[in-house]
Length: 476
View 1 (cartoon, rainbow, N blue to C red):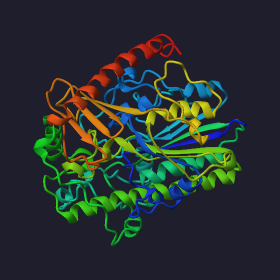
View 2 (cartoon, rainbow, N blue to C red):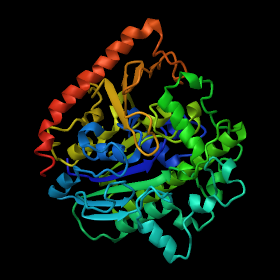
View 3 (cartoon, rainbow, N blue to C red):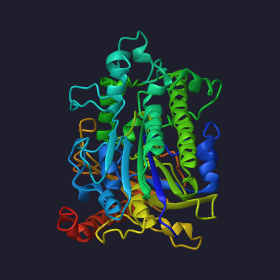
View 4 (cartoon, rainbow, N blue to C red):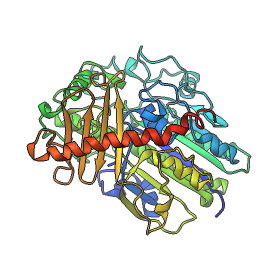
């Protein structure tokens, strides 16, 4: 089978429950729906960290965050597998967000056309002008951010939900996708290409155009998970919530007790952002068809982590709840006639790294902890893994626990907080909304002990497997 082109689309902060064809009827996602119908959807995919850069550095290295060394945003990336594609003859191009550090180092790409976070207007963040900043400046516009939205009289009531008022072509999700379309229309090379498209949305501010938002007029969204007892959440989680209430991270003024109307408005804006991204997916496919390569191109669509949207009383990510750590993933390989499949096995976001390498005919390094998903194109494959893990280190937002680890296996999820006697344990079969914390329940102490021990075993196995990365990976 000839080597395909690969288009790898990564959105920012998109929940798993945002594709209509996967059972979420409140969504409007016709292009993603078609991908689901024609491709393979992984319905239980988990990120390795519910934070942008650690998740992405893990994805582009095939290593867990504790192995890659990228545990927080703005920590230097040591390695990506992209150079292996370049060495194999692929033209490697990044358009949009990757959240690398430093922002514009090549990291194996031949070209990088970088657009970063939608809102970087914070004194703790490094100064940087990306392609979108320059386009807004050239058009004579000021970038919408917390520095502009905060002057609105209703700023503290919006939960980060605003209508995009500049020209639609300057919306970040449109700008990035159309920049990728421009590359597809302009590049004259004939070698296979790896095109990574990093869409900045639906990360807040939640900022759809009025036209996209109007599509959701009258739509009833699932209510946030609110039947919880905040006192059952570990201290670090309660302090994280207070951090959000005290600070307008990404122009989201988080409220302790928002009204149902405010939460529905937030979810409508978020969904409209996803629908705008879905429309751009259609434009990307049209550009591939116009170039004459659509039938030779594998398209992979996913996100780096999710968004709480007020589930469990929380804002954005930085937690191990399902809405934060579970992401959508759909793959379409037009060369294979086995579309419309849904894989319910546990899979991990960084598994897409060796998957892409295998599709390109490149052998993944032996020290990679990620596992290729290509065997899932064969109907009788065994599950790639029965357990997934996620990690979270203290950063500028989640500051109250030095390290958080999630293990998810079978019906169980356990969340371990380093240096604390508190934790979380959920039976996801009996309690899919994760409202009953069984950490201290006498009847479940054996399960708690077993899963905690499995984290220890996993970390030791991880250290052994990645030993050669320190020699081979860091010198490649």
